[in-house]
Image 1: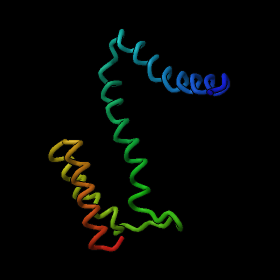
Image 2: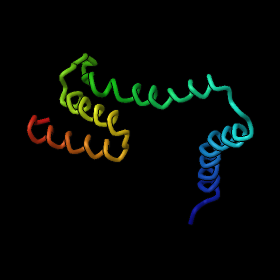
Image 3: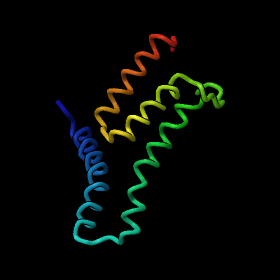
Amino acid sequence: MVSKEYLAVILGMGLVTFLPRWLPLVYLTRRSLPSWLVEWLDFIPAAILSAILLPALVTDSAARSIELWRPEFIVAIPTFVFAILTKSLGGTVIVGMVLFGLAEKFLNI
């Protein structure tokens, strides 16, 4: 049986996760944003993705030294080109997975 404390923690975590997403959505749907702000907000997903991916692609996690010719980085280049040309998220994921599988097989990652 689930105790009341566990239920309270689960509900609290749900609220803490839900409210920061829901409140801006409700607040901003009733307002028109300036075009410069909308253009600026369009860059946020790419900036976050770059900040997450780039260190994993070009640095060695143990020594934190830059290695530009890591297999992950080599695979990321054609995947990135495919993403730009097709703008297909699903296709990009599949191409990246296939290329990484091939690199793993032939480059002994």
